[in-house]
Length: 252
Image 1 (cartoon, rainbow, N blue to C red):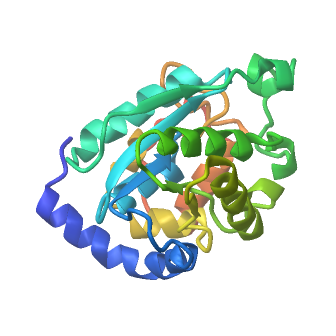
Image 2: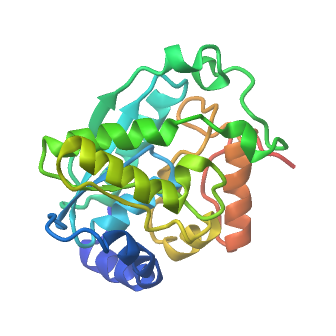
Image 3: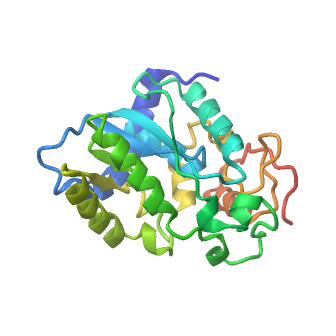
């Protein structure tokens, strides 16, 4: 599936207006940096995939995938490539894959073993991966320092309760990275004021069914039973948009 570029850009611009107002605040201290290039942390998930399309409307986008040794990574990379192929946007560069093995940090955690992942009825707190955003943003910023890219975007949504996804963290960590790297680093979270159903509703023209939001995917398909699958299904229902995602099973 290919997306007509002219139509796609018009539709994205129309849907981006409320989102861009959130992003302006993150640019407030960005004088003197190049705004026509941006590194976008990409997981192949719905949120970060939409963010790639959004950012590509006015900047050259470098999708950054960080391998940490998590159980689902091969499936995520496959989903990310499928989405980018369908997007077919010349302003989106090839995927850059960085690595920071995290097995020694997380040990036998479910994210490494793939066993007993948080189920649909478990609280979001059980999905927390301590310091994950610290790892992801750090690597993207270091890569940017060697590729003349000062902006790093992450697809954090509203309602995210974790400490490394707060506006205060993004602002403060951007300052720390700027000091440590000796150059301006601007961390952007343009969708921080939106919920997943908002994203689905506003960007329903994108091939969202190609994205992967699952902690236990099999054969590039959603398991349908984990916390993230349930969150995705619920968001589509709340957005009143048909969910074309293939689930191996579904929570009643």
